[in-house]
Image (cartoon, rainbow, N blue to C red; front, side):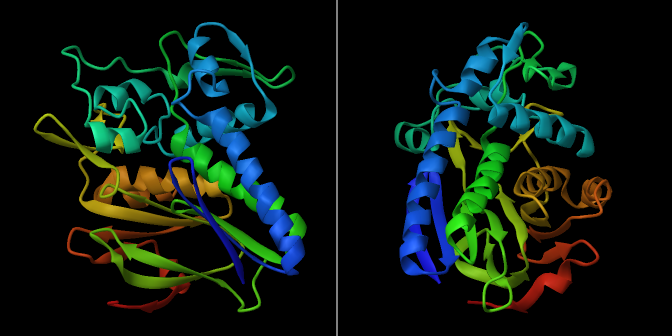
Length: 310
């Protein structure tokens, strides 16, 4: 197995591939270029990005690229499938909680203080799509953050790009992994990290071609004044989610689906997760609670190779 590691989308990227070394090296280079191009397109931290142009056009029709149209349309479908627990129109709430610049800056500079007024909530359900001209209409005042779903979408398309030069490959973008093909070992091994100690692995998963995504409330955290915040916004309250789980890992055919359901099930917690997950028959999930205990969907244990205390 050959590897390439770098930083993009404000996270760690790992490319893995099997094949002829020269072809794989060529594939790594093309894949890095692809990820860089999509990052510039979907980021909310650059006013010139296509996403921010769409946000500024709210209330009018916006002619989108094929990539942006696809991501927003998938987001709309998944918004309904998760009973609105996934809602990309929480950008105002994220900024209100102090996540108004990249996480590196938040951690270095500290979070900005929340204004006195409550964060205005968007109306993602009012979004309209015209497929033929690839036009999107956002309701006035609606602003999208596509960070998570775009990261998953990029990981899957990047893996498909890399597959042109590899026998089998995988792209892991900060916990959003998509594998194309099956390695010579017979399956991809994915570590289930202890959300309270990244140096520890709670279990090893064996997964075939497809996606694995993990969402956690323990990594992207910051202080806003005296209040501790995290990036996982509950759309029902507009505040960082209060959940009895620390992380959720989802196995699914597609990375955007895995990413969205990982976040949604984490917000739902133990009381509502099974109900939300039942809306799709092609996903399995494993959750980690505050005591490090594993919970999961009925067939999730089929992916567990072993449990470990390392």
